[in-house]
Amino acid sequence: MKRILFTAVVLAFSGLTVTGENAPEKSVNSLDNIVASDVSAKAGDVRGINDEKDVTGLIYALQQKERELQVALDEIARLRAWIKKIKAVSESESATMHYNMGCMYKLYKQYAKAEGEFLKALKISPDDPNIHYNLGILYDDDLGNKEGAKKHYKRFLELSPSEQERAQVQEWLSSLQ
Image (tube, rainbow, N blue to C red; front, side, top):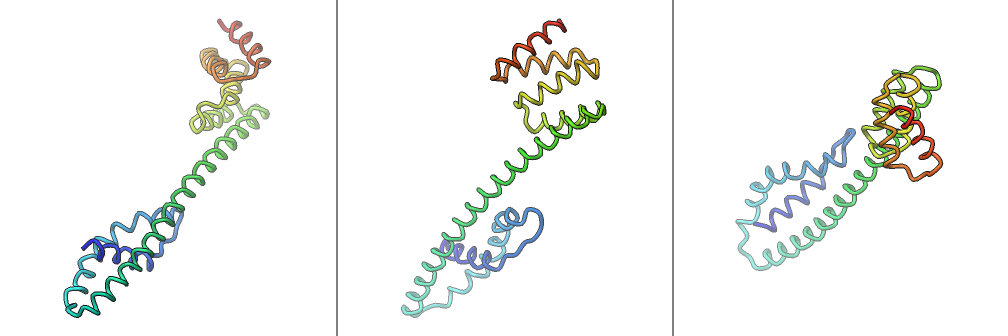
């Protein structure tokens, strides 16, 4: 029965086409559903075999399908790894885009919009010291939110490796206390 399952998976996978935003992921995740429906039909194909020559041929064919299945499984693993990389890059670029939009809104004195963009960037990348630095300044200088400024200045100091900026932020933080 196990060999029949492998054959059903390979046959089902070879004819599978899925389109859309998550097509590779959908294709990979659809295999379980296809196998469940096809296994019983494929099992009926081997019951009528009585000839040893037919059995040998079937064993050879199943071994070939197992090799094809392994190739397909390797491809699935490769696609999943690519999907993971693409999502990571996409999130990083999204955080940078929101950060840059926040900087632009601040430059054009649209402080509420700047805060929203910085917060979106922070949600994606909570350990980015630059986001905390700019949120601290925005809260301190533009929005009058001294508690928010303290919070982000402190977080910046926890994350920042730069001594020059650290000294300045420590000075700003002491002026708020």
